[in-house]
Length: 161
Image (cartoon, one colour):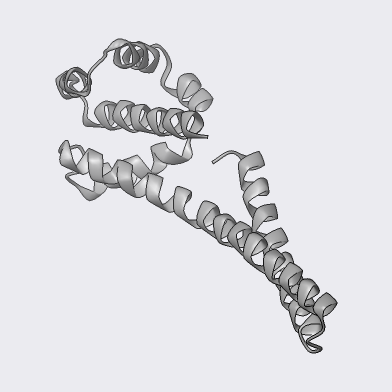
């Protein structure tokens, strides 16, 4: 999740929370006297309560779910491929997840670039998996598979918006 998206999610969360509180206050203040104008005010308060309650819930979901679900999903896929068989492999995966793409390019150099380009040119998941399994070093396999799934998840998220 990019920093701007995180700030937007937090802003959505807090604005929804404030709006819920305002909606409750408006509803309670205007629903005490059952005159026609107060009923309209109470319904406006209820409207704010519902609309901004949805904003609040959306903010909560967008803050909590993407960061948790994305990493867990990648772990499950790499386990299914047999790439995370040991604690050493899993710890390496956690290290790789924390490194931004541009830093991977700098740190792992030409080998990483070749693997990345090859994987991105392959069209089917079956061919991608065959290529990754053909690599000799386990850390190299984990590195390129995790990068592939991170980029794929980012692209899927971008296109769904």
